[in-house]
Length: 469
Image (cartoon, rainbow, N blue to C red):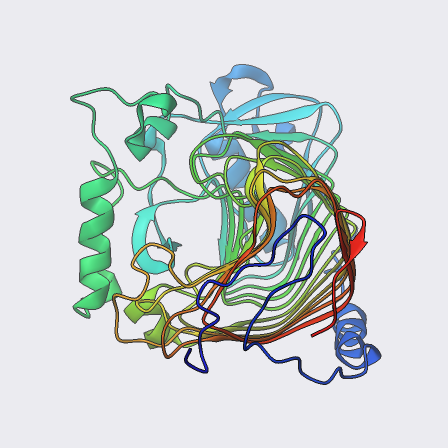
């Protein structure tokens, strides 16, 4: 057996010992050490502050009848408020139909309780915007709420943001019949491959023009290259694609937000190449990963070379989704110093609690990732998966790296298996520590391959202690 392989030797999850062959334990480091970094992240992040000025969209022509299109009224209110020095752009109670809303510096879009913003389902209402689609830069349909290069910007309140995506609008573009696609309809497949090919061939972003006549669905809320961002309190429903998507932004806070939508690629919150972010008190009930941290796909991710880093997740609830807290798969720019604590996850439709996705086409270094005090009711597949066989798997020239992962006090009531950890030949997953964890309701063997330095300390499976390494 090579030094990189445990030959898929499994952990028998019936309370028996963990048979891990040649995997060697690493000495434990002080638990307080890495979490001091999390405390520093928490202290350094501050909510943007706005002038006391309030301007209601109804004072600039908005009509909350659910039928009148208010795109111009939103734009006019934001412009006047920004020109006056900033403040709250207030959406009072009512149902406001609109196209995309573009925010400016020093603007807080405040959606009051009883207010609903209903976004148009007509693609013609969405002009081109500079964005990322699955980790690749592109000019595409504007996100529903968007800001680029802004400072001090927010979406707050107790109101509802409804993207109105469904099996009749936006979602069929994924090409799946269960989301409304039928023979003869357009779908994203050809556009998606064309965009990815452009990126690999080094086509300048200014020439990657999609949007009208194409089928790449926009994100819901996107802050691109922004500083001091806050999304707080709102409910976000039925996005065309990813829900909350900060890109290349700094000092970002997403707090007490509820995200719902079981459409294709309806990830809850996808921080991409951000530096400094707090996600807390949020609820995710989604059609894809609940939180997925990213940093660009393949050649584009390597070209931009901006990692996602210094991210703290706490006190969140994850329901349906492919994964609870996820890193990948678009992580060619790397990810480091991610912390998650005091979260609850449970759903028969939640595949994994903690999920890492990478392959030899992405590459990228993922390191210094720390989880603690995570409660899991049930997950359908594995509690923890680290998968280098995702999509292209080993078919690529770039070495994926995952190392220095610690998981403390993860308590799972029901999971198919505990671990599904699969590195690649020449690219082992390194230095995973499980400490003070318990896993119940387990009925399948874990899968361990091409893994080094798996350390198990005080772990119980189906009520029985696992032997030390």
